[in-house]
Length: 330
Ligand code: SF4
Image (cartoon, rainbow, N blue to C red; front, side, top):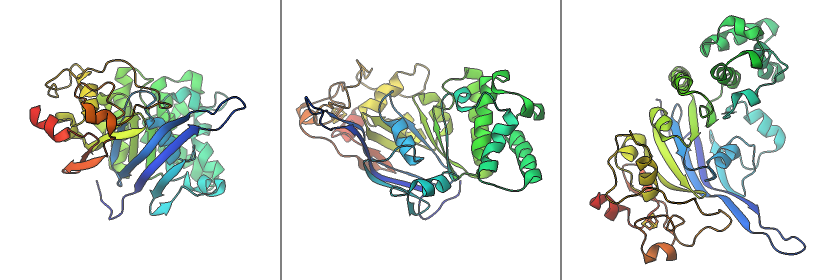
């Protein structure tokens, strides 16, 4: 992994709120889908973004690739602030930041052959001449281990794993520095999952691509990520290098997520930290620490005062009033 003085991507205090207007009869609640999210990503690095469904991780990814407008905050990519870009500027910027979605089949056009779909972004951006584009399609297919004859096949004739390889090849056509991967292997069989994750790792080593890897599956994230950020109800509650976070999680929510994985060799928390119930609605988050309604360690201060995300040691940050005390007790 190479380094840069300035990170490839720096996201600061990013917010995405929905609703909050007034209808004829009553005012609507503001849904705080993403609240004050800050993260960084270096060249060739993978940051795993994890949390339960609806915690705001996909919305964060969609804002970074320009598919949703932030309500506030800053997204700086290669030193350039992306938050105020016009649609035309975003179109150009998108070449360098690609996104891969959960369901590869729905990302493909059923009427176009695989070769045409991989070629499409090259045609759209008029990259190279006709012969050069043909050669590039062949090279991209080889890079993602698709057989040459697959170029003439249509999406319904290929497997889910092959479809995800097509989507990855199409993203690579633009030679991106960053790919936002939103649950890219969740829809695939376990055996295919490991082949696609190995492919992503291999491409990263060869091309120095950075990944923001969004997933609810902590096993997959552990395998791929250099660092991990855990989200709960729109906020990052813990962030740090993957191994220390998995070995000794500091936030009770991270403890609970890891405790839910039976064969992960992480130490069990002293008190049962199994998650009970569903997360509260982001339209009505609990006061103070948003996790206090499910936290087995909650005390009166937790419902009165929201903890800040603070650095505790060696590049690790946590949003809990009592993180040090809980660590000492574990
Ligand atoms: Fe639990 Fe309190 Fe820490 Fe929130 S601040 S995670 S409720 S102990």
